[in-house]
Image (spheres, rainbow, N blue to C red):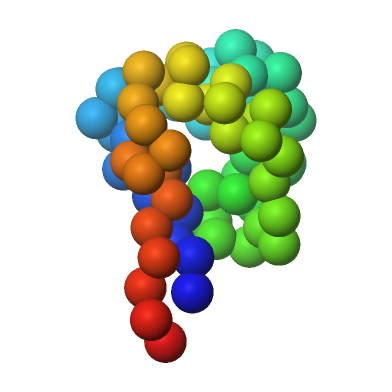
Length: 67
């Protein structure tokens, strides 16, 4: 199972969902789906943009856990 820890990184960087959405260039709805672990996929370009804005590594956002 892949866990998305986007909310944790957003809290650490003190950035709102609205601000991240604007800076990354994806809709608020799509970012919310990702943040709430409802996404089935993510584009590498989107992941790269999120990491750039949040100044973090992919491993800070995505985590693998065995079921």
